[in-house]
Length: 233
Image 1 (tube, helix red, strand yellow):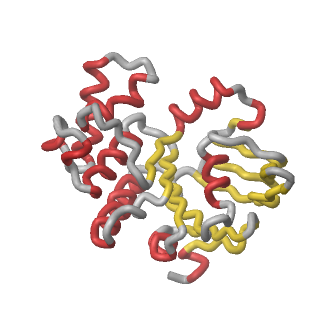
Image 2 (cartoon, rainbow, N blue to C red):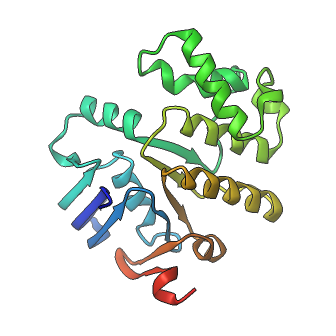
Image 3 (cartoon, helix red, strand yellow):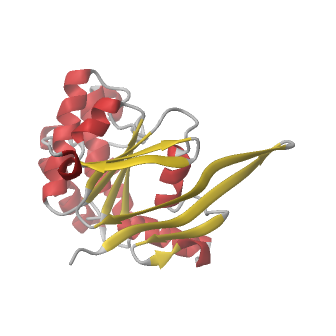
């Protein structure tokens, strides 16, 4: 029986913007099992980014329950949330978020520092992750010396290096051309085959169609939740 790694139960999130109350999420519910490959899709302002922040333990719900790795995030301290993020979740961003003054190897080693792993072991694990994304020949390069696709592969290696249960990717192909974007999606597919849960947040219908499951959000509500099995693909 699969383990539930993400559980959202009647989750709402309300923001106060001046005198206006903004309902980013309006009581959404869904579960994600270990090893799923899914996308959360919606236009700008739909609530998908708020949903991503809940999964990434970067925000707390106004109402309802969010459980990540079996732990209810609303009951945790900021320090406990930081530990949970570092242990369970690997992040991949549209703009890569690589540190320009560090080499490729040092960028990938960085999350391991927060786990208290000694430097020689960090380097060894980082090289293994970089080998998986075919970038061992770039370990001493700085980010500005890489193409967009190479930067994103470094970001994916950095997300993988802690062996997280979940990789959470925010518009990971948004800054890439279509061919490179397709290669990045194929890389996510390979990582998913090893049992890692992949959650991609996107506005791109093409990305939504390339994942096994797609949750569509609109105006803070779940519009649809479909899998390829349900659709008969």
